Length: 139
Image (cartoon, rainbow, N blue to C red; front, side, top):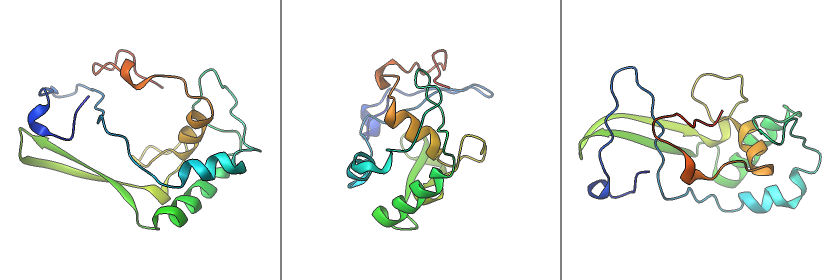
């Protein structure tokens, strides 16, 4: 887990071809999202495998999530992630556009809105249990 203070983090070495999970300790604050989700938006949404939530049955709801994200946070809102080498050499920046999420079949790096909704409805893992080696990788 990384903190927002680069000097307080233990460096994580990622060898070529290796995969690791990175997590930032601070959560993303999305005001109004919980109120929308708990206000009845999910009343007709079903998770086919609540013991292992990864998608929803009503795939069309992805568009509703995107519309709500656009309304709540703006159509161009995004979560920006920047990877650094050392404390200051910027390697790459990624933007995850909130209102342009897709479903589990998309493999382009977009947010997966169906996975998000399924895990909102049936949370299955505690973030502290994620192993950076990907040995306990959530599906």
